[in-house]
Amino acid sequence: MALALAFVGMSLMNGSYWQFVLYSFAIGLAAPGTTGLVYTRIVNGWFDRAKGQALGVMASGVSLGALLLTPVVGWAIENWGFRGGYLALAALTLGIGLPAVLIGVRPAPTDVVPADVEAEEADAPELAATMAVLAQSSLTWRAALRTRGFWMLALGMVLVNAPSTGILTQLDPMLSGKGVGAGLIAFYIALFSVSVLIGRIGVGMLFDRLNARRVAAIVTLGGAVGALLLRSPAPNVAIPLAIVLVGLLQGSETDVLAWFVSRLFGLAHYSAIYGALMLASLLGTAAGVVGFGRLYDYSQSYDIALVGAAVMLAGAAVSYMLLPKIRLPD
Image (cartoon, rainbow, N blue to C red):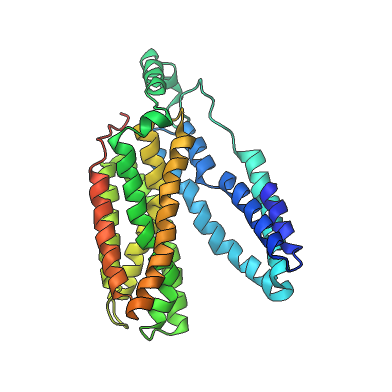
């Protein structure tokens, strides 16, 4: 509700700079409550053996929402200007988001086994004892800060978000600079969106079945290859392949962070630890947005930025491999 009210405030602006700052600040305060910071904690509480798949399905809602609802907001802006756009955002938040939260979101009870564990197993004393041990093994955020896993994960988030965000924000001018037409750029953007969706669900499912560190490292190295392929001239089959690889990487971000935080540190102080790592992620995002643009201004080419992106992603893959080993539930 606070987010919807902030959107309504944006629609009522009269041109005052401080009004814009105030409502932007309000959005900044309310928006984190509608992100993975909250929902991944809930999903992690309910699911254990299918944790990655559940996180992927949850995160796919972001991609589906952007795909289905962006045209609605665009239509409102086209017909009623920016005020109509913000009112449309408020209406969608109250009309879809709020009922979904009130009806469908339930925190996992602390005294039950996660929902994907069979009911007959929930009665087993051995399983109850295992769940008690898992609860006791959760780390406080202060203790997490003293672990190698926290800092390797933080480093990975910075090294992934800087290049992936830089590529995403510069993809349109990058492609147009290669002579790619507007129609083909639209197709590539759609291809990127589909790849993100596949990455969100697919990577999570792989986490439940394979070595998660290796999966994260392979997907990240794929993004590094994609960054290098984006240096290719167009038209070239390497361009759509690069976009798919970078899209898969972008889609895996929520799965990677939420899955590793819950497995490495437990759920007792999950939100504090996740929030601290999100700060590292956002620092990478800011660096990528500014860095890609500055490097292009300096060299009048994206080649330096793309090579740097590949190097950073390779470093992120190494940081994932240096995470502590995790034993999946039987």
